[in-house]
Amino acid sequence: MSFASSLHSRRIFLGSAGTALFTVRGLFAEHLAATPQLTEGPYYPDRLPVDTDNDLLIVGDNITPAVGQVTRLTGRILDSSGSPVKDAVVEIWQTDNNGVYINSRAPNKDRQDKNFQGFGRFMTGSKGEYNFRTVKPVPYERRCPHIHVKVKKGARELITTQVFVNGHAMNARDVVLRELRDPIDRELVLVDFKPVAGSKIGELAANFEIVLGHTPDERSFLANRRAKSEG
Amino acid sequence: MRTMTASGAMRCGVGILCGAIAAHGQPPFRGHGPSRPAVTSDSFVERMMVFDGNHDGELTRSEITDTRLLRLFDRADANHDGVVTKDELKALYTAEAAVFVGRPGGGPPGQT
Image 1 (cartoon, each protein chain N blue to C red):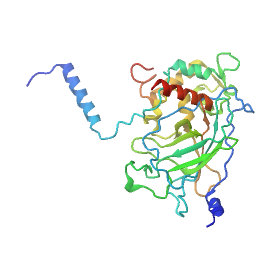
Image 2: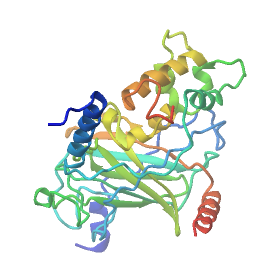
Image 3: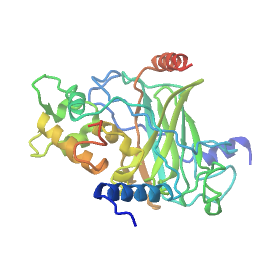
Image 4: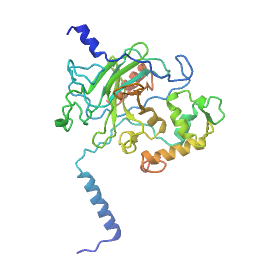
Protein backbone atom coordinates (compact mmCIF):
# COMPACT_ATOMS: atom_id res chain seq x y z
CA MET A 1 0.00 0.00 0.00
CA SER A 2 1.48 3.34 -0.98
CA PHE A 3 2.02 5.98 1.65
CA ALA A 4 -0.64 8.24 0.15
CA SER A 5 -3.31 5.55 -0.04
CA SER A 6 -2.52 4.29 3.45
CA LEU A 7 -3.06 7.81 4.72
CA HIS A 8 -6.37 7.94 2.86
CA SER A 9 -7.53 4.66 4.32
CA ARG A 10 -6.92 6.03 7.79
CA ARG A 11 -8.66 9.29 7.14
CA ILE A 12 -11.95 7.91 8.28
CA PHE A 13 -13.85 11.11 8.40
CA LEU A 14 -13.36 14.79 7.89
CA GLY A 15 -13.18 17.18 10.75
CA SER A 16 -16.51 18.79 11.35
CA ALA A 17 -17.18 22.24 12.65
CA GLY A 18 -18.10 22.21 16.31
CA THR A 19 -21.44 23.51 17.38
CA ALA A 20 -21.56 27.24 17.91
CA LEU A 21 -20.13 27.91 21.33
CA PHE A 22 -21.43 31.38 21.81
CA THR A 23 -24.51 33.14 20.53
CA VAL A 24 -22.65 36.38 19.84
CA ARG A 25 -20.95 35.91 16.51
CA GLY A 26 -17.33 36.78 16.23
CA LEU A 27 -14.15 35.89 17.98
CA PHE A 28 -14.79 37.60 21.27
CA ALA A 29 -17.57 36.12 23.37
CA GLU A 30 -18.71 38.12 26.35
CA HIS A 31 -17.61 35.34 28.69
CA LEU A 32 -16.58 31.72 28.36
CA ALA A 33 -16.16 29.50 31.39
CA ALA A 34 -12.74 27.84 31.54
CA THR A 35 -12.60 24.07 31.21
CA PRO A 36 -11.48 22.64 34.56
CA GLN A 37 -8.21 20.76 34.94
CA LEU A 38 -8.44 17.19 36.22
CA THR A 39 -5.81 14.67 37.18
CA GLU A 40 -3.75 12.92 34.52
CA GLY A 41 -4.17 9.68 36.44
CA PRO A 42 -1.61 6.85 36.47
CA TYR A 43 -2.05 5.47 32.95
CA TYR A 44 -0.81 8.03 30.46
CA PRO A 45 0.95 5.72 28.00
CA ASP A 46 4.44 4.80 29.18
CA ARG A 47 5.27 3.78 25.62
CA LEU A 48 3.46 5.44 22.77
CA PRO A 49 1.85 3.08 20.27
CA VAL A 50 3.49 2.92 16.85
CA ASP A 51 0.32 4.46 15.45
CA THR A 52 -0.60 7.73 17.19
CA ASP A 53 -3.08 9.15 14.70
CA ASN A 54 -6.58 10.34 15.55
CA ASP A 55 -8.28 7.04 14.70
CA LEU A 56 -8.12 4.82 17.78
CA LEU A 57 -10.21 2.07 16.19
CA ILE A 58 -7.56 0.94 13.73
CA VAL A 59 -3.98 0.23 14.73
CA GLY A 60 -1.57 0.86 11.86
CA ASP A 61 -2.38 -1.25 8.82
CA ASN A 62 -4.41 -3.73 10.86
CA ILE A 63 -7.75 -4.51 9.20
CA THR A 64 -9.56 -5.58 12.36
CA PRO A 65 -11.15 -2.66 14.16
CA ALA A 66 -11.41 -2.32 17.91
CA VAL A 67 -14.52 -3.51 19.72
CA GLY A 68 -16.88 -0.91 21.13
CA GLN A 69 -19.46 1.70 20.27
CA VAL A 70 -17.95 3.88 17.54
CA THR A 71 -17.77 7.51 18.64
CA ARG A 72 -16.66 10.67 16.90
CA LEU A 73 -15.18 13.04 19.45
CA THR A 74 -14.88 16.59 18.12
CA GLY A 75 -14.31 20.04 19.49
CA ARG A 76 -12.18 23.12 19.49
CA ILE A 77 -9.38 24.50 21.58
CA LEU A 78 -10.13 28.13 22.43
CA ASP A 79 -8.29 30.60 24.58
CA SER A 80 -9.97 32.60 27.33
CA SER A 81 -11.14 35.24 24.87
CA GLY A 82 -12.70 32.65 22.58
CA SER A 83 -10.03 32.73 19.90
CA PRO A 84 -9.08 29.37 18.39
CA VAL A 85 -5.68 27.98 19.34
CA LYS A 86 -3.75 26.83 16.30
CA ASP A 87 -1.02 24.16 16.34
CA ALA A 88 -2.24 22.75 19.62
CA VAL A 89 -1.58 19.03 19.97
CA VAL A 90 -4.63 17.30 21.43
CA GLU A 91 -4.05 13.88 22.96
CA ILE A 92 -6.66 11.45 24.20
CA TRP A 93 -6.24 8.14 25.98
CA GLN A 94 -8.78 5.77 27.49
CA THR A 95 -9.43 2.12 28.25
CA ASP A 96 -10.61 -0.24 25.55
CA ASN A 97 -14.10 -1.72 25.64
CA ASN A 98 -12.94 -4.24 28.29
CA GLY A 99 -11.62 -1.53 30.59
CA VAL A 100 -7.91 -2.02 29.82
CA TYR A 101 -5.42 0.80 29.25
CA ILE A 102 -2.43 0.35 26.92
CA ASN A 103 -0.04 1.50 29.68
CA SER A 104 2.16 -1.50 30.54
CA ARG A 105 1.32 -1.15 34.26
CA ALA A 106 -2.42 -1.26 33.71
CA PRO A 107 -4.32 -4.20 35.21
CA ASN A 108 -6.28 -6.94 33.40
CA LYS A 109 -3.94 -7.16 30.41
CA ASP A 110 -5.31 -10.64 29.64
CA ARG A 111 -8.53 -8.92 28.54
CA GLN A 112 -6.88 -6.24 26.42
CA ASP A 113 -8.30 -5.55 22.96
CA LYS A 114 -5.09 -5.50 20.91
CA ASN A 115 -6.96 -3.81 18.06
CA PHE A 116 -7.61 -0.68 20.09
CA GLN A 117 -4.96 1.99 19.71
CA GLY A 118 -5.69 3.39 23.16
CA PHE A 119 -4.05 6.75 22.49
CA GLY A 120 -4.41 9.32 19.75
CA ARG A 121 -3.09 12.71 18.70
CA PHE A 122 -4.38 15.54 16.56
CA MET A 123 -2.91 18.94 15.81
CA THR A 124 -5.36 21.81 15.48
CA GLY A 125 -5.42 24.11 12.49
CA SER A 126 -6.40 27.75 12.29
CA LYS A 127 -9.93 27.06 13.55
CA GLY A 128 -8.66 25.26 16.62
CA GLU A 129 -10.68 22.18 15.68
CA TYR A 130 -9.80 18.62 16.61
CA ASN A 131 -11.46 15.29 15.91
CA PHE A 132 -10.98 11.65 16.90
CA ARG A 133 -12.65 8.37 16.14
CA THR A 134 -12.73 6.15 19.19
CA VAL A 135 -15.07 3.98 21.29
CA LYS A 136 -17.55 5.21 23.83
CA PRO A 137 -15.76 4.90 27.15
CA VAL A 138 -16.81 2.20 29.62
CA PRO A 139 -16.48 1.94 33.40
CA TYR A 140 -13.02 1.08 34.68
CA GLU A 141 -12.82 -0.51 38.13
CA ARG A 142 -14.64 2.03 40.31
CA ARG A 143 -14.27 4.91 37.86
CA CYS A 144 -17.16 6.00 35.75
CA PRO A 145 -16.56 6.04 31.97
CA HIS A 146 -14.16 8.79 30.93
CA ILE A 147 -11.68 9.85 28.27
CA HIS A 148 -8.43 11.53 29.27
CA VAL A 149 -7.47 14.64 27.33
CA LYS A 150 -4.24 16.58 27.29
CA VAL A 151 -3.49 19.64 25.17
CA LYS A 152 0.02 20.84 24.47
CA LYS A 153 1.51 23.57 22.35
CA GLY A 154 5.18 23.24 21.65
CA ALA A 155 6.81 22.27 24.93
CA ARG A 156 4.00 23.69 27.06
CA GLU A 157 1.13 21.71 28.52
CA LEU A 158 -1.99 23.84 28.25
CA ILE A 159 -4.49 21.63 30.03
CA THR A 160 -5.03 18.08 31.29
CA THR A 161 -8.59 17.04 31.91
CA GLN A 162 -11.19 14.30 31.42
CA VAL A 163 -14.43 13.90 29.46
CA PHE A 164 -17.42 12.20 31.07
CA VAL A 165 -20.61 10.65 29.66
CA ASN A 166 -23.51 12.89 30.63
CA GLY A 167 -26.18 10.94 32.47
CA HIS A 168 -24.11 7.85 33.32
CA ALA A 169 -25.24 6.23 36.57
CA MET A 170 -21.70 6.00 37.95
CA ASN A 171 -20.91 9.70 37.60
CA ALA A 172 -22.34 10.71 40.97
CA ARG A 173 -19.88 8.49 42.86
CA ASP A 174 -16.79 9.06 40.73
CA VAL A 175 -13.82 10.19 42.81
CA VAL A 176 -12.48 12.49 40.10
CA LEU A 177 -15.72 14.11 38.98
CA ARG A 178 -16.67 14.69 42.61
CA GLU A 179 -13.60 16.89 43.01
CA LEU A 180 -15.51 19.43 40.98
CA ARG A 181 -17.79 21.04 43.52
CA ASP A 182 -18.92 23.86 41.28
CA PRO A 183 -21.86 22.81 39.06
CA ILE A 184 -20.37 24.90 36.25
CA ASP A 185 -17.15 22.87 36.34
CA ARG A 186 -19.05 19.59 36.26
CA GLU A 187 -21.22 20.83 33.44
CA LEU A 188 -18.20 21.62 31.27
CA VAL A 189 -16.84 18.06 31.34
CA LEU A 190 -20.17 16.19 31.12
CA VAL A 191 -20.60 15.54 27.41
CA ASP A 192 -23.63 14.19 25.55
CA PHE A 193 -22.87 11.12 23.44
CA LYS A 194 -25.61 11.41 20.84
CA PRO A 195 -26.58 8.91 18.15
CA VAL A 196 -25.62 10.08 14.67
CA ALA A 197 -28.73 10.31 12.50
CA GLY A 198 -28.68 7.77 9.72
CA SER A 199 -25.74 5.78 11.04
CA LYS A 200 -26.10 2.11 10.25
CA ILE A 201 -23.67 1.11 12.96
CA GLY A 202 -25.17 3.15 15.81
CA GLU A 203 -22.33 5.63 15.74
CA LEU A 204 -22.26 8.32 18.43
CA ALA A 205 -21.10 11.93 18.31
CA ALA A 206 -19.62 13.78 21.27
CA ASN A 207 -18.63 17.45 21.19
CA PHE A 208 -16.16 18.72 23.78
CA GLU A 209 -15.06 22.33 23.55
CA ILE A 210 -11.98 23.19 25.58
CA VAL A 211 -11.66 26.76 26.81
CA LEU A 212 -8.27 27.51 28.29
CA GLY A 213 -8.36 29.45 31.53
CA HIS A 214 -5.54 31.72 30.55
CA THR A 215 -3.88 32.52 27.27
CA PRO A 216 -1.12 30.04 26.45
CA ASP A 217 1.52 32.63 27.34
CA GLU A 218 -0.15 33.39 30.67
CA ARG A 219 -0.28 29.72 31.57
CA SER A 220 3.37 29.31 30.74
CA PHE A 221 4.23 32.32 32.86
CA LEU A 222 2.18 31.02 35.78
CA ALA A 223 3.58 27.51 35.49
CA ASN A 224 7.13 28.81 35.43
CA ARG A 225 6.51 31.05 38.39
CA ARG A 226 4.97 28.16 40.33
CA ALA A 227 7.84 25.86 39.42
CA LYS A 228 10.37 28.42 40.62
CA SER A 229 8.57 28.98 43.93
CA GLU A 230 8.31 25.24 44.52
CA GLY A 231 12.03 24.90 43.98
CA MET B 1 -12.80 -9.23 79.95
CA ARG B 2 -12.37 -5.53 80.52
CA THR B 3 -15.61 -3.65 80.21
CA MET B 4 -15.59 -1.05 77.49
CA THR B 5 -17.15 2.41 77.65
CA ALA B 6 -19.64 3.37 75.01
CA SER B 7 -17.23 5.84 73.39
CA GLY B 8 -14.49 3.26 73.50
CA ALA B 9 -16.74 0.78 71.74
CA MET B 10 -17.56 3.37 69.09
CA ARG B 11 -13.89 4.20 68.51
CA CYS B 12 -13.17 0.50 68.24
CA GLY B 13 -15.96 0.11 65.71
CA VAL B 14 -14.70 3.02 63.63
CA GLY B 15 -11.21 1.58 63.78
CA ILE B 16 -12.44 -1.75 62.47
CA LEU B 17 -14.34 0.01 59.70
CA CYS B 18 -11.27 2.02 58.66
CA GLY B 19 -9.18 -1.11 58.74
CA ALA B 20 -11.70 -2.87 56.53
CA ILE B 21 -11.59 -0.09 53.98
CA ALA B 22 -7.79 0.03 54.00
CA ALA B 23 -7.58 -3.71 53.54
CA HIS B 24 -9.93 -3.66 50.56
CA GLY B 25 -7.06 -3.89 48.10
CA GLN B 26 -8.06 -1.10 45.75
CA PRO B 27 -5.48 1.63 45.43
CA PRO B 28 -6.62 4.74 47.31
CA PHE B 29 -7.24 6.63 44.09
CA ARG B 30 -8.03 10.08 45.34
CA GLY B 31 -7.52 11.73 42.02
CA HIS B 32 -4.65 13.92 43.23
CA GLY B 33 -5.93 16.63 40.98
CA PRO B 34 -4.86 20.23 40.84
CA SER B 35 -5.61 22.39 43.86
CA ARG B 36 -8.69 24.51 43.41
CA PRO B 37 -10.12 27.55 45.15
CA ALA B 38 -12.82 26.74 47.69
CA VAL B 39 -16.26 26.44 46.16
CA THR B 40 -19.37 27.56 47.96
CA SER B 41 -22.95 28.16 46.99
CA ASP B 42 -22.12 31.88 46.91
CA SER B 43 -19.05 31.44 44.71
CA PHE B 44 -21.13 29.44 42.26
CA VAL B 45 -23.85 32.11 42.17
CA GLU B 46 -21.22 34.79 41.65
CA ARG B 47 -19.75 32.88 38.71
CA MET B 48 -23.15 32.52 37.08
CA MET B 49 -24.06 36.17 37.66
CA VAL B 50 -21.14 37.19 35.46
CA PHE B 51 -23.65 36.48 32.68
CA ASP B 52 -26.11 39.04 34.09
CA GLY B 53 -25.62 41.45 31.20
CA ASN B 54 -28.27 44.00 32.25
CA HIS B 55 -27.33 43.79 35.93
CA ASP B 56 -30.88 43.23 37.13
CA GLY B 57 -29.85 40.47 39.54
CA GLU B 58 -31.46 37.69 37.50
CA LEU B 59 -30.48 35.60 34.50
CA THR B 60 -32.47 35.13 31.32
CA ARG B 61 -31.69 32.39 28.86
CA SER B 62 -30.46 34.85 26.24
CA GLU B 63 -27.93 36.24 28.72
CA ILE B 64 -26.20 32.84 28.89
CA THR B 65 -23.84 33.49 25.99
CA ASP B 66 -21.73 30.40 26.80
CA THR B 67 -24.07 27.85 25.22
CA ARG B 68 -22.44 24.98 27.12
CA LEU B 69 -24.21 26.31 30.24
CA LEU B 70 -27.75 26.35 28.80
CA ARG B 71 -28.39 22.84 30.09
CA LEU B 72 -27.52 24.03 33.60
CA PHE B 73 -29.71 27.13 33.16
CA ASP B 74 -32.69 24.95 32.23
CA ARG B 75 -32.14 22.73 35.28
CA ALA B 76 -31.93 25.77 37.55
CA ASP B 77 -35.09 27.33 36.11
CA ALA B 78 -37.29 25.39 38.49
CA ASN B 79 -40.55 27.15 37.62
CA HIS B 80 -39.76 27.26 33.88
CA ASP B 81 -40.39 30.97 33.53
CA GLY B 82 -37.28 31.59 31.48
CA VAL B 83 -35.63 33.45 34.36
CA VAL B 84 -33.16 32.08 36.89
CA THR B 85 -32.92 33.83 40.22
CA LYS B 86 -30.12 33.63 42.76
CA ASP B 87 -32.36 31.50 44.96
CA GLU B 88 -32.88 29.03 42.12
CA LEU B 89 -29.12 28.87 41.63
CA LYS B 90 -28.56 28.19 45.33
CA ALA B 91 -31.22 25.48 45.28
CA LEU B 92 -29.54 23.82 42.30
CA TYR B 93 -26.16 24.00 44.00
CA THR B 94 -27.50 22.32 47.13
CA ALA B 95 -29.48 19.66 45.26
CA GLU B 96 -26.60 18.68 42.99
CA ALA B 97 -24.01 18.77 45.76
CA ALA B 98 -26.17 16.20 47.56
CA VAL B 99 -25.98 13.97 44.48
CA PHE B 100 -22.29 14.35 43.71
CA VAL B 101 -20.75 14.92 47.08
CA GLY B 102 -23.18 13.01 49.21
CA ARG B 103 -23.74 15.68 51.79
CA PRO B 104 -26.37 18.38 51.33
CA GLY B 105 -24.63 21.62 50.58
CA GLY B 106 -21.10 20.36 50.35
CA GLY B 107 -18.28 18.10 51.30
CA PRO B 108 -16.27 17.18 54.37
CA PRO B 109 -16.00 19.55 57.34
CA GLY B 110 -13.93 22.59 56.49
CA GLN B 111 -15.33 22.88 52.98
CA THR B 112 -18.82 24.00 52.04
